[in-house]
Image (cartoon, rainbow, N blue to C red; front, side, top):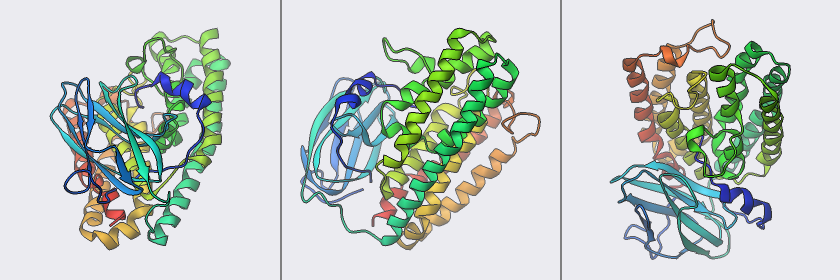
Length: 379
């Protein structure tokens, strides 16, 4: 789940489509090592250059503000080319992207809300990206098929969930909630790239922008577990969720996917775990966080496995470490499996502070090497 941007909803409806992608570093007139230096603060977003050649581009980001920020490369219609959320005050991050010629914006979003502070970025050249290993094209095609498969499998599960709501069956709706989210959580970076779908389907109450109506899974989650009621409003929300997810299903095949967007997306899924699932904030009413947690890890691991043949040729030590850390995290997660719940995991409110720390440590141990995957596939 990412914070909503209401501007996306109106912008996407009228914007002309462009073609671009996500991924890593080419020498430019930017920073000394070829990266665009991005200095974020509470009211500014300074960039070291306004123009770079098409191909592999890196942002060297430093947050000098007092709030966690999000930095994005955006199409003019607000679709996301690449992004990094939750860059804490005083911290740095390197974001790698593969971009075609065209007009873009770099946005810094203090507090990860609102339109953000933006700078124009012109990408020059033939519009073609650097020639790459044919195995990477196979990886992209396989990941696109995987994402579509997840969307196709999600809709029947969502309809089971929403049909229970429309039938007024509280227990059946509760049981169907977590399973309905698995395919979405495995491929969430693709949904987020469209800009307008995620805010309608997966926003928590504390992520709402001013004036935004609360819709989607978590509004229904609150009604089912905290309020323990199903009324006309919830039945309307159920219908809207199906409509919005059918829109997502239809758009998945048109998503812009590159090797580096896959790698960055895998890291974003781990960030989702660290900032929402481990803390218990994501499914705060149902406490089904571990189901979402596992789905995020599965999605990240799928992207990694498809990219691994090329990454292994370029950085064998990295893939060895990633194999070990994925295995370790999955082993840790498996401790919390149970047959007594519909989602197959213990309720997260039963997980102790010490156990959450163990889960967090395992996530962090994987996130650090995973952040290097994008650079490894474009060496």
